[in-house]
Image (cartoon, rainbow, N blue to C red; front, side, top):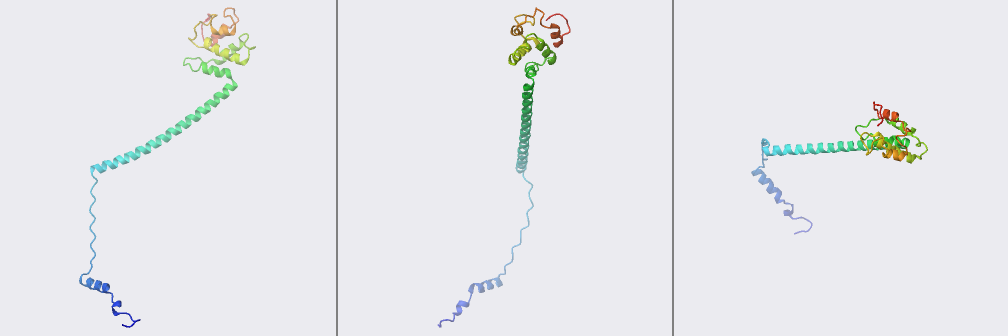
Length: 194
């Protein structure tokens, strides 16, 4: 065999020839596509499962919305409480006697709101104007607890053992206390002493 010339067999491609022969004898016909099967309606189990999952998603969404609403409500309440605390702090700095009145009297459901009359009567009590402010505030609290609240106190209001008379140093029977002004502040209609 001479070199450089190729072998005639090397040019022969048996697979290609065989493939053509086979295709000529047995032509390849594509398989027809199957007809789509009609979808069965979902079973009762699958239908209920889908409804359950939808309900769960809706419930989670509603729960999330409810949590967001609750957080917004809590935030608004916190802001209102902070504003209220700030107002109370400013009011307390401006009028500590009014703040004591609020603490002592307005917490009672049957309290009669007549702060100006009581405060005026308290200010006209002999010896009050000469006291330091912190002692005066404590005396104001004692006055409210023992003289202005209804149905409170161990002693009657005109009893010398009443803590208000002891703290103020006034004898209730000497006439230095204006009982008529006190009755008006208490909104009593009768004239006799307490």
